Image 1 (cartoon, rainbow, N blue to C red):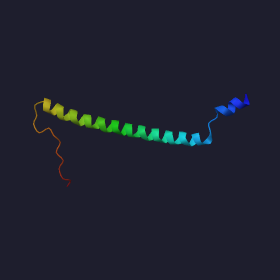
Image 2: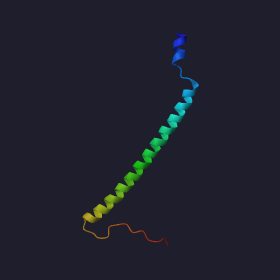
Image 3: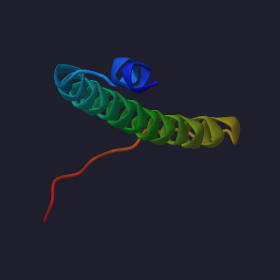
Image 4: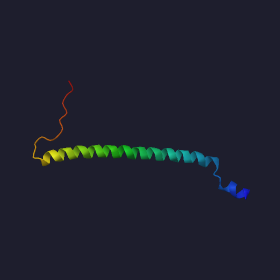
Length: 68
């Protein structure tokens, strides 16, 4: 039975690979969350412009003026 427990253990090199894989997955999910937040913000801006245009208003686009 002791032999089967030793066979189930992963070699030390695999633990380093697992840490690297976890770091890569964490980075991937962080990028995915940031892309989702950016997408939601963009959709909200587009919705505001469409609501303005649906009400029959003109010049609904946002105008960025110089800072005073």
